[in-house]
Length: 335
Image (tube, rainbow, N blue to C red; front, side, top):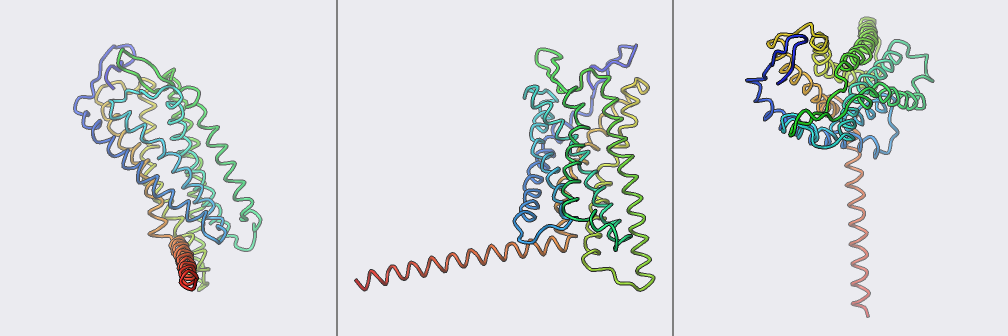
């Protein structure tokens, strides 16, 4: 914010009272990084190590956990960046990599939720058809396409993000040229919010309508489908709570970049709200695995079965070791 000019008038806008952000944000981001790495690794290990094959919904949620893990793994660099008053010291490669990981999480997270919503839509609205589309093979193929799409949509960050030296001790990891920021923000708003949220909203309305009709007609929804749908809706609500403010923030930020909002008060408000809404979005990467435990009954069952299995294997190993030790001592005593 400091040193920004408003178009034709060289007006300097100071961040002034916003200096508190440089002490609060690094601690918050580092906490999100540590919790996110531990929790999302835990989720992935449960899905990978459990003896039963993952359902289609679990394949999508597992990939969502992988996208969250990608984001939080690079957040420590961003925490240090904020701590140093946004002075980047990690070089050009990490500048591009960190921002690509953030953008890929933004895109892939919402795309995986689109896939989950479509799966629940077919499961509840058309339960007797589209069986092939709801199979594990198609699910894995769709996930691969999501990762490819997320990377392609993140290419502007890879191309235009770079390290810029603004002074002897000031190095920024920013978009160059600055005019490209508008293109990136518009892409995020359209492909990361408007289109996917429209699909999710359509599917969610149809899902809720189908559930209501089944209840009114006295039909029993399969317990498995009901549990999966409850978890999916909880994850969707969490995503919207954490990310919708960030997407809405993009509208005035584009007006600022196009020199329509030029006064220092507007820039100061956008600086504060941009920090709050961006880091609220990061919190979603920690909230998702917590929801799996709180809401996901099937996930809790898998965790219990996995730990029971590990405990049984450990007990069996200890028993075999004890028997072998006893036989060894017995043979020695006999001799």
